[in-house]
Amino acid sequence: MTTGSTLFPEWASADAVILAWPHEQTDWAPWLQTVRSTYCNIIKHINKAGAGVILLCPPTQADTISEQLPTDSRVLLIPAHYNDTWVRDYGFLTCEGPDGPQPVEFAFNGWGEKFDARQDNQVNRRYLAKLCRQQLTSIEWVAEGGALEIDAQGHLLSTAQCLLNPKRNGQMTLDAYEQGFNDALGAHKVTILQQGHLQGDDTDGHIDTLVRFTPQQALVIQACDNRPDDDHFKSLSALCEELAQRLPEHHQYRLPLPAMFNNDNERLPASYANFLICNQAILAPVYNQPEDAEALAVLRQAYPQFTVTGIDCSALVQQFGSLHCISMQVPQHTLKDAVISQLQAGVSVYAG
Image: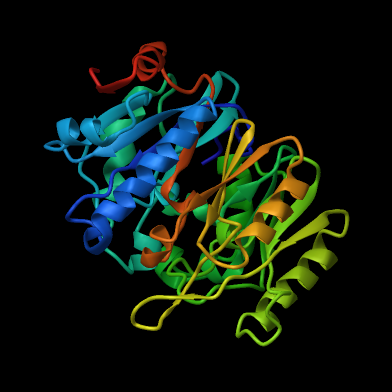
């Protein structure tokens, strides 16, 4: 399907960020209170960056959630049913269209049928589409927001390991993906990377754990230069080399790699590249690791016109994701005026 629209880069001005509240039936159950505290901290910083929060929540929990939020929060609660909280991968994307911002969704099948995602796959049509000025466009094939990175020139990055998982779109070729991203998201150039993957990543190598664009034609890369003996060193060094060959005009800012393990001694995919750009702020995940300070310093070099704030995401990575994975930005003028008005009024349940 050709939409005639182009995906906004993440640094486009945003009115809101979509999150989904962790509840007892999600995989957050063992860490529920800690993770909820993390969410409240993230909401505080999103609001500070000038965006409201659209918060999916269980229908029976709206009142109790309101009590947990910071008193000056700007949060619009959306009673909803969902499998889990990885909104980056099932929340709608927003494209710049001829009639204004256009919400676009792909099918979501739990990263290639690894997990039950049937309710997640209905969230846009059931709950979020009615918040938007323009009608939701649904693309029939599978893709996840975390698998896609685009700049202001319409240059889109993704990874072959993710796209070629046959449980996403069968035997769909990389050429077909390139054409599909051009038609659906207005990508003028598509670069599909062959290298790079983090242990513990259930997504098959989402780009938002590996490589991010900056507005100044540069790349922020989850590298491993600080750990030459790490299992990741070879593949992440190969990723940096591939990017140097395929995007030679882009300066590289290389992030250090932390080494985090859970109680079962499984390596956790703690990526400093999994940050959220929200207006003039970079909300950057940190993990209480020795590399945190260096990672923040690299991000401040890469985004000199943004305020970079570290947010403790050590709880989020216990479920093998981080800050970018749980969030989806909504550019300005996407939402209806009544939604914006209610969002700016404090904490309330959607009245539409």
